[in-house]
Length: 220
Image (cartoon, rainbow, N blue to C red; front, side, top):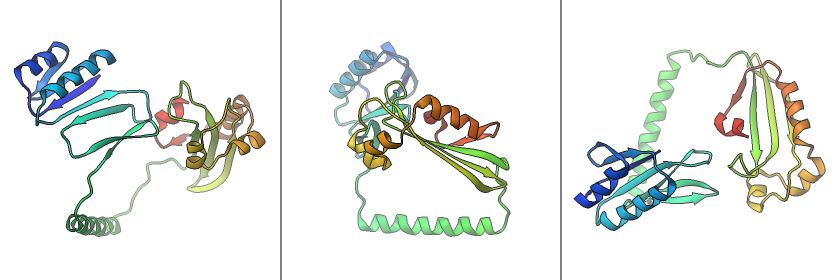
């Protein structure tokens, strides 16, 4: 599925967009098209948008599950190891100080509110926290290089579990730097993935599993 927004839409561009997409609001189009059609539509937008602004959001196989393109915006899409992030323009010193002051005031307000009430945790008393390290972001081609688990009982950490996984080929220098896990360590301490998963399940047992960005970890 893709979503397209345009600030200026000539009759010819509107014709191109409505041929493939639904116009759900002025300048907002949605639809489900192939990558080839999506790229052709973006080319047409670029040729017809002039001094206007345009943005396209579409689904991809990545940790965020979407990517985007923009035209005429001050924010710039930037690829970071397969994830598209937005590079914001630098603010003036005056604007930065104003933002800092707002943040401090917000923190003070939040602290005052918390002081006046008790905070109830929605987590169960016992659970296991899972974290994976991988060679990349695509579960169809990348590999797990580490499984880490922490068991929490009555809000206290009682056990920890960590296994390094043998992989096919070499881990890239970027992943070595990002995770701190080197190829030498994987060769020296790594075990087979099947053995690591069996030991992980034995550690988790029937405890609830807690993850950050669970879709990513469970995808692997």
